[in-house]
Amino acid sequence: MIILIAGTADSGKSSYAEKIFQELDGTPKIYLATAEIIDDEMHERVKRHKLMRRGKGFVTVERPRNLAGVSIPEGACVLIESLTTWTANEMFGGDVNTILHDFMSITQRAKHTVIVADDIFSDGVTYDELTEKYMRTLGELLVKIAAVSDRVIECFAGLPVIYN
Image (cartoon, rainbow, N blue to C red; front, side, top):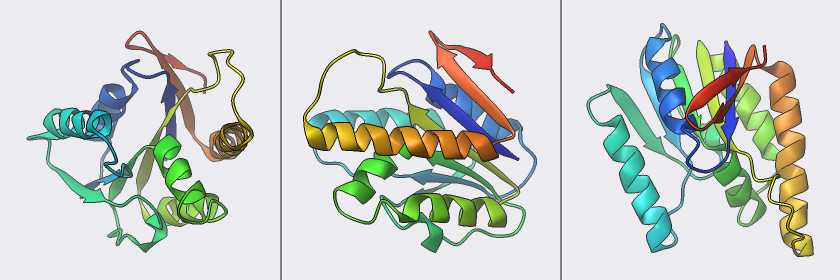
């Protein structure tokens, strides 16, 4: 099963993703953390997410790019946090063309895959060309991943809206 969970910053998508993840059958529960700690804000966000995961039995693998290289045992559940960060990492230090391939590779090896993404498209701001390219790339990836997902969920104010 593939589950895509999206929402704005601090919408509750990460805690909801972890709740669903815990309910899925399969072990081990591999949490693929894609963040690269580049500033104090990201450090605090990673620290908060680690506290949220404490005691839940997740095996955390910190990997900002080349996620297909992660060892996924048969029967494992994988949570990828997040497509948004992973896309940025690949665009600005890797190969963005590998994301969909790597994602599909993970889903073929895992029993269940949950992927979290940020809705960064609603602010109405005009950005520079590079940021606009990043947003288009992320949007294209979201459409492709949603198309292969068994369930697509949007979180708003801590509440899930299930689309399929």
